[in-house]
Structure formats: structure tokens, C-alpha cells
Image (cartoon, rainbow, N blue to C red; front, side):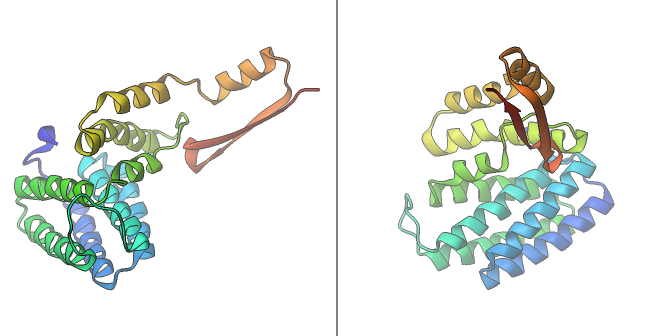
Length: 215
């Protein structure tokens, strides 16, 4: 997040994120994972409109916390009580809200980075939550492509947090980027004797379903 340290936000996005953060804080207080997932989706949408990386991080935080709440009791690196951890997250969200209201963007960025680290230390599955947002397909919608590329950049960092190595995750991201797109896969299927080859994109091309006949 170095390249965005202290970077201001458009007023409209700042207002939107403030409202969303307050809702996330309330959902955390209620231990409501479904609401957190909905808010994560909303924040992803905001990031696609404004091409704002910090919104992507917030979406990842909300989704990860929803999974932690769903699991309730999890394996963790440090013996921290489940409710104490979530109560701490509520306080962290309160701090983020305050920083954003005061437009102290450098402190806001620092709070995001600190929360990501706390979650990764608390739940060893954090890397899986990050990966679950990526689907291994080429994205054809330009707004969604922005999100995809930036989540891809986040994954090696998460790997560094979790297992101490980022190289395997960099290889994963490169493998995804180098994989053929939908039309290229159709051509390969036809060259290998498949007939009536078609595909259908889901979620703007995040996932695609290919089908073909070979007798």
C-alpha cells in the first residue's frame, strides 16, 4: 500500500466507504456474517467504479471476518479468545471510521494494513479467503478486470504474511494470467476433436463454463 500512502479519495467514494464501514462495524457487533459478505460485495463494486485499491482491501477484510464468524471456533497461531478478537476488530473499525471522517488518509491506510496482519495472524485460512475471491478465468468486463488484477497483486503479500514465502503465490498468479482466455480455449477444444463447443460467462467472466461433444 506504499503507493497510496496519504492519497486522498474522491468525496463521493469517501462518503460511500464511511457509510459502509459503519455498517460493517455494526455487523461485527451483531456477529452477522451474511451482512458482512453483502458489504464486501458492495465495496468490490465501489472499487470497480473508482479504481480504488483501498476499497479492495476493505472488501477482503469484511469477507475474511464473515468467514471467521461462520467458523466460530478456529485454529489460531495465538491463543486469543474469539469474542476478544472480534471486539478488537470493532474497535479497529471505529478507528478507521474516525481517520476517514478526519480525512487522515495515511493513518487510515496504516489501520487497514494493521487489520490485515491481525486477521492473518488470528486465522491461518486467511490466504484461502483471499484466493476464494479470485476465480481462475480471464475477465472480460473492464471494471471487474481491475479488481481481478489488484486482488492478484494482494495474494503474494498474503502468502508472505501466512507462510513466510510469496514465491508460490506469485507462481499461482502468473499461471492464472498465462492461462488461455475463453475463445482460445474454444479453439483448442475444436482442434482436439470437440464439436458444438460453447461457453457461458458468469459474473462478467470471473467464471466461465465451457462445453463440447466428442464421440
